[in-house]
Length: 157
Image (cartoon, rainbow, N blue to C red; front, side):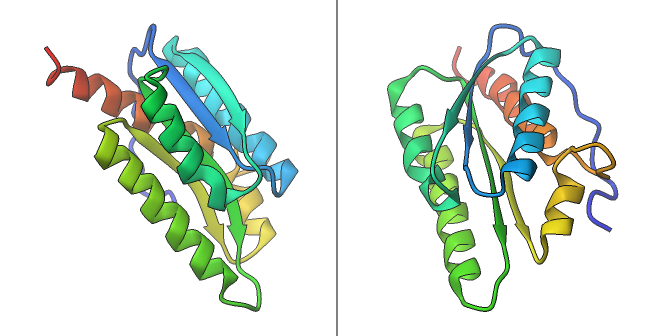
């Protein structure tokens, strides 16, 4: 089962600036992911800015622009890709994952990975933090980014 063994990580992110970059496809699922990310920022006392993009393929380039801007201490990338009958799923998932990883490593900025890669829309809804969902991947990705930003502060002194 997805989520089994997931840590219950919380941290004091007071004053951290978090860019939440969110795709626009599958609006119901995205609304849950964004609410989860924003809720985690509120709980951590981090400052959240939501930036919408067309789809999951566009997440890396906007994440890079955010990283280069110097306006954020951490980023969270949220999106949904649902498997269909063509190789589109694999291409988009691989490009988004590789691109987001490059942004994090090339720019030394945490990028919380909230890209849902699901076989069905029902699986995506179950991970979106909606009422009745079993998981809140928007919140989890945000806590991971906030925690990593706090850890990285140790190396910048």
